[in-house]
Amino acid sequence: MYIQIIFLLHLYIQILQTQMRIEEIIKPTYPMAIEKKTLLNVMYTQNVISEKFNEILKPFDLSPEQFNVLRILRGQKGNPVNMCTIQERMIAKTSNTTRLVDKLLLKDLVIREICPENRRKMEITITEKGLQLLSQLDPIVNEHEETFAKNLSISELELLNELLEKFRN
Amino acid sequence: MYIQIIFLLHLYIQILQTQMRIEEIIKPTYPMAIEKKTLLNVMYTQNVISEKFNEILKPFDLSPEQFNVLRILRGQKGNPVNMCTIQERMIAKTSNTTRLVDKLLLKDLVIREICPENRRKMEITITEKGLQLLSQLDPIVNEHEETFAKNLSISELELLNELLEKFRN
DNA sequence: AACAAACATTTGTACATACAAATAATTTTT
DNA sequence: AAAAATTATTTGTATGTACAAATGTTTGTT
Image (cartoon, rainbow over all chains, first blue to last red; front, top):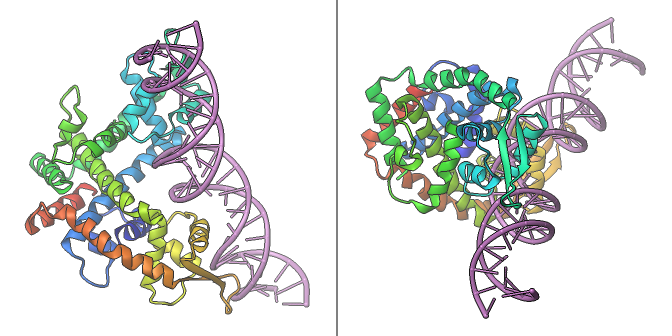
């Protein structure tokens, strides 16, 4: 099954930096159906991207989710953002914005205040320290994104986008 | 950033079943660079696949990881598998096979015995109940995998695989 | 045989997801 | 104005990941 194989693949991520076809990585005993193989390939590719992104954030002591919240806050250009807005921007399913923001508070990356107009609401603002951290990360994150695309031409990238959009219905 | 946007997209998964381009989903204020867009598209597509797979498993009270372990055990055709083999097949990084197997034990889907030849080792075997659960899931999981591919021709699928392999280096 | 090293698994901790329930403030209804 | 409904956030619980340390067993060395 693909989940099973996906994780098997993890083994190889650190070892192999060269381009490999999915069969070379998972070495199935029987030839895999193209349908299954494609699904696997999407899963695996996302995995590689996430792995690298985690490595980028690790030295900055940020989780991808914390980074995510900081980016949302910066996007508001200094205006405070309340919890439910952050939540909406992150996921439909109620993840735990409260606890994420707690962690950011401990690191002095954000400020949390009660909204004077509506005391149910909280106003979260990114601090100068938070902004500095993000600007430190900006070039690294941009480089990360561009690295993946560099092996494909513009028209190949466009084609890949089209195929992915068709694939997921 | 893509993580930020990826989760935003979640909002739309339940609402939209029709084919959409990535820009229509995330509605960026400025046109997104094709490099960033492609990365996003991979992340989002994996997300859609995982979501659907979770939904499939939920009525069976199985997590993807638990399903994964059961599949590994079935693959051994009745032979017991020890913890480190399961661990290897799942991930390089030491995830928590012990606690995953604990959960499966509670549901009587597996048996855990001390290996008589080497008392450090544990022998994990899938039970009849576990096998029955998997065979119930088989057609649903297969259908799930094939659904995604059905909008693409064989040559498009092959092309998608090639592009993904190039993309991740 | 005793000690160290290696191996297999378990346990602990911090953090994240997913979901449900609780709490508190505000708005709507009667 | 009081009760009900809605809204915003927090808290709780179960589960999973990621990583480090602890435990128990076997193997290798002297």
